[in-house]
Amino acid sequence: MDTLSCALLPASCTLCGCPLPHLSSVPICDACWMDFPVLSGPMCACCGDALDAPTPSLCRACRLAPPPFVRAVAYGLYQDRMKAAIHALKYDGLYPAAKKLGWMLAQAIGQLAAEAPSEMLVIPVPLHRSKRAQRGFNQARSLAVYALKALHKTYPAWRLKLASSALLRLRATESQAGLTRRQRRLNVRGAFSVSSAVAGKDILVIDDIFTTGATARAAAQALVRAGAASVRIATLARARRVYTARRAASTYSSSVQPSF
Ligand SMILES: [Zn+2]
Ligand SMILES: [Zn+2]
Image 1 (cartoon, rainbow, N blue to C red):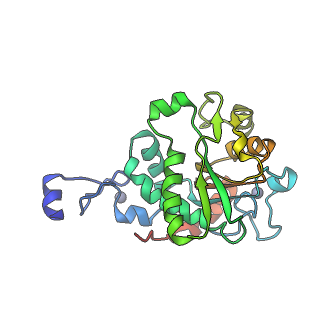
Image 2: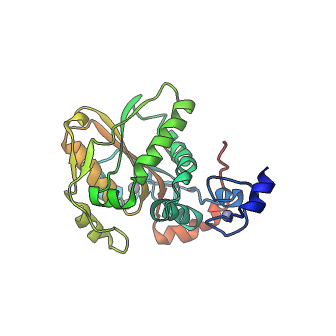
């Protein structure tokens, strides 16, 4: 049936263009899924950025200005296949990929299992309503929904509750792409408003990418100001500093195979 369908409906992988052997609702081939760049090597115990050496355990940025979150984790590196897949999800409507990408996000969140509270409110970074209307969905929320489904199976005792409306974006901020670190910080400063439901709660903020951490810091700051007991961040992918990314590139060749 698959072969027949492929002959009738030839499809190719969105990321590499090779013909797909099976009829699939997600047009990404197995080889591409295997080739998503995962994070490895010494990383900052707080923000997850790459370190040149395992000690000290915190990067310079986190030592100089401790972030308002306890820890930020990510599944993979924001480059190559990962970058292309996130781009396809957000801008080309590759919505079916959210399930597998959500599984990857669940792997990242699993890194918190040993130290995070047994109960957390899960808050996707919101889009401003104009952008949400334009895109039709909030990719952070979709990823969070699928990640929570996966985590419900792997960590059944972990009580993670989705609270999508606890954080709102007050103004339509410019896209962070192409801005410097400082411009990003200013761009998102004061961009969020928080519902009173977060007071005293441990929070897990979800986003698709962590670039300089400006959005994560701004969201965490707003949550802490509103009385959140603690904030952790989980993203599907993260960027890393260029000087270490090049050095570490050779260690990203191995890949984790999602098990479905
Ligand atoms: Zn492919
Ligand atoms: Zn750090």
